[in-house]
Length: 128
Image (tube, rainbow, N blue to C red; front, side, top):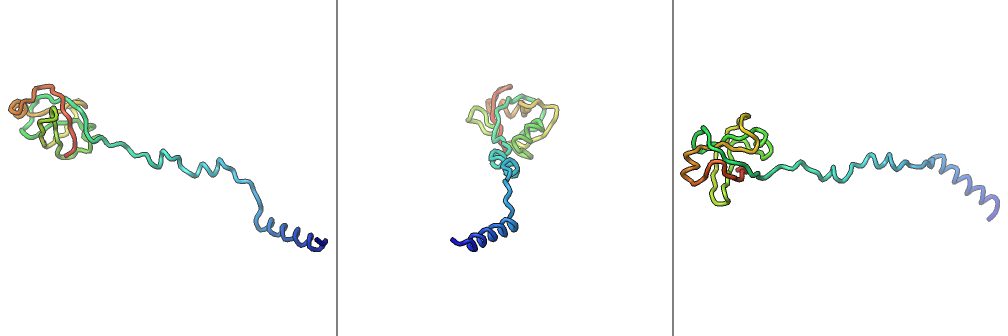
């Protein structure tokens, strides 16, 4: 290569450097922009069902009283399915009451006795 060609190449390289200045990219700054994978795929878990105790109380037939926190966890608004021992299934209207403990459901005693469900029985409640 002649001197002239070498100077032309150097001048072209200097022009490129002027147009595109080379800087080192900070990897931490780039990584800060990308959210972690756990936040992309994490969703708030909504419970499908929960094991609770059925207690007798003063409510009308086909109604149960539940805690508002339990109702929000399960997504229950107006009706719920109460399953006792996997065999007896009841679809009941829901009354939300703050006085009811979190893990207890208050049901009509006559309806429960007629269907063979004792006081303080373990049951599963889910959204209908």
